[in-house]
Length: 229
Image 1 (spheres, rainbow, N blue to C red):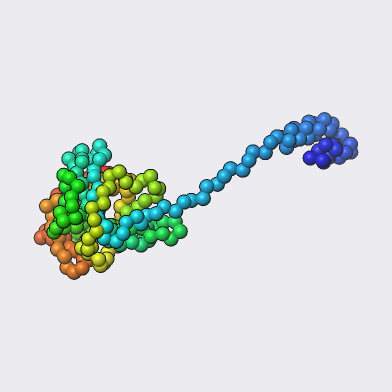
Image 2: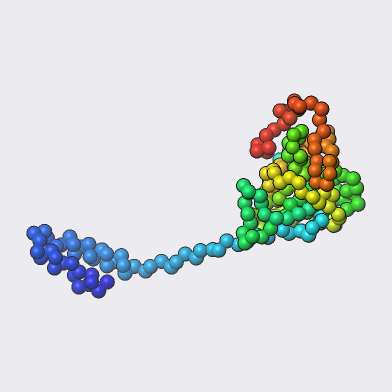
């Protein structure tokens, strides 16, 4: 600023045939610009680690379908059960939570309830596979459930009903698209529709296989694509 106030650089124009008036105007403009109040630095918010591991191992929660889309399958107002069966980082290709926090992995039980059930109501209800029927591969029976922001957790639609032994503790397969709390209804509706009337067998703890005599199942071609739900 001191250099500008002392006609900085004007002396150079004395040795030139060019008029220095334009340079003086430039200096005045620069001075006005520099004298303006410098805006305060914007505060950069640090990313906040979201707790994605909210339940204890073996906890069972009843989730109530409540979106308009759930009316299409006539599941609106009904309850489906989730159980925490594990935790860890998302497998390669998924998103790891901040600060190395683990994400919980859940089972989904293959039954809808008209009212909030008791823990005893589960009985021998089977687990719901979370993927396509496939004869050549073991079935995906559990998955991570992703939570990127606290507001996404549907606390108003989840009811804790108790803690019980985990039906399948051993994890033999890690494939499959992670579940998301923001998409949990269409994801569950898709699996419920896909596995209605289909059977699978338990080969050993954590290993399940689709039971079907034919290699090609024509009904699968008539089901909607998962990504469209």
